[in-house]
Amino acid sequence: MNIIKNTHQLFIKYLMITIIYNSALGIWSGTIYLFMRHIGYTYAQINMFLMAFWIVTFIAELPSGWLSDYFGHINIFLLSCVIRSLGLLILFLTANNVFNLIMVAILTGIGDSLFSGTLDAWFVNKAKRIDKHFKLENAFTITSTCSTILSLLTGFIGAQYLANLNLGYPILAGSILLILCIPFAINEAEGLQRFKLNNVNRLKHFRLTNPLKFEKLKQNLKINRDFYFLSLAGLPLSLIVSGPFNQWQLLFQSNHQPIHTGWILIGVNMCGVIGSGLSGIIMKHFNKLATLILLSVIMTFTTLLSVSINSTWLAVMFFLLHVLATSLDEVFRYTMLHNVIIGDNRNTLISFNNTINAGATLIALSLNGWLSDTYSIKFAWGALAIIGEILTLVGYFWIFIYTKNKSNKVNKN
Figure (cartoon, rainbow, N blue to C red):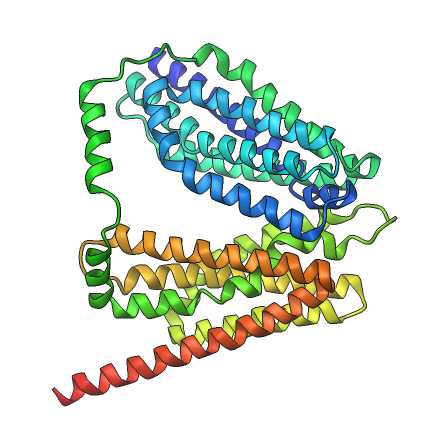
């Protein structure tokens, strides 16, 4: 009986902390770029913030795992709350200072990386210590559902109500909510764990053997040519999606009008969920390459309609169709990449794919920021969508030719 009570209390605490943390991120998700623009940053500077944030999270992800294992999961979670809260507070208090903007990107990026997996690891470890037969699936399902719903609700409140009082209030509220996580988690803080010798040896082993060796990667890619071509063909999609993904708030929110991005945020999240759910159904019944081509065309076509139609709400509807197609394409293409891999070096190949996609995203963000400042957001979306679609179709056509030739060789043999 005590075991059930203890695991229940632990789950409630885990649920509360997760909800508050995700709400702290959700409350400004529909207005943060509006706020940056409002306080004087250019489109290029905003995209520079995004690039800096992404680079920091990419670099800090692995060291964060080591720190969590050494110092304790809750200790690192508390540090994440403080650092990310400080970053948001600096953004709220300062205006039109590029140095401060980069500092915010660094702090929030570090905070994001430090958070990664800490709460889940703490909960799993402690739950298993209390009851080794504890079923995690139900706990994670309930937590994911509740935190998603409440994060969406706080995002709506932040955009529709707080932002209409002051565009900075959602940022400030996010900073405060992050600090509010601390009282719920502070009594779970662990004492400093001794850094065991085997951890040192694993760290040395990682440094010596884990970096991707160029020759080994080349061999893997030669064996997995289907994966290689599919991975390359998807790179130009970054040109199509970078603008809509990051700038929709700026495009659809007119100056000197009440903030209405909360409603759009709900639509974005719903379309994302629907798109992810549809991918499995479509994959079973339709030609995979033809589906990828069709999705890329839909993504481009809806982007062009979004920037060419005068009616704001009609443009929003086409943008939401773009989100639906993008979400579907992302899950669909990622599943295909996994399915075509040959051999045991799956992590190596997926890391390669993630790395080149990261590079493509950085290039797309740079071009998008420059075009948005030089011409307009609409021009940037439209121009990059057309260029991206042309390059994507060339890539998919190459895959079609390659697949056809490979099939003919197999039939001859």
